Image (cartoon, rainbow, N blue to C red; front, side, top):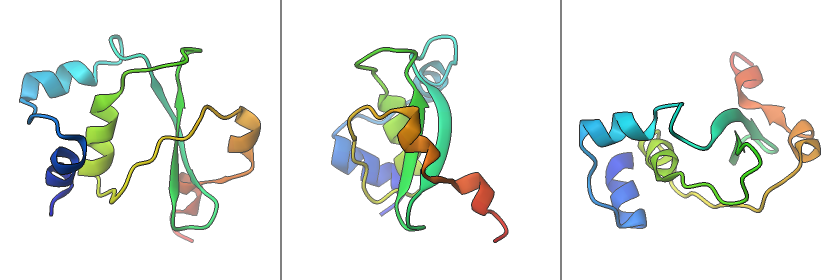
Length: 97
């Protein structure tokens, strides 16, 4: 099953057309910013977002992107502090090792 098909199966959302996709990822319109991608064990990836202090952030486009990139499962964890992030290894730093 492709990542996009997995997204539709898990999330139960309709397929997006190009305009919805472009609108959803417009940095001026979304309420989150990509912060980092890290790991503790090399198997599970943790996607860190800057939510600009918002306690709840709509981010369906992010679910779509993560599944389309090949995620088998997506779990949302509670908000964590930057101290938790500092204890993990950035996946970008693992490249080439």
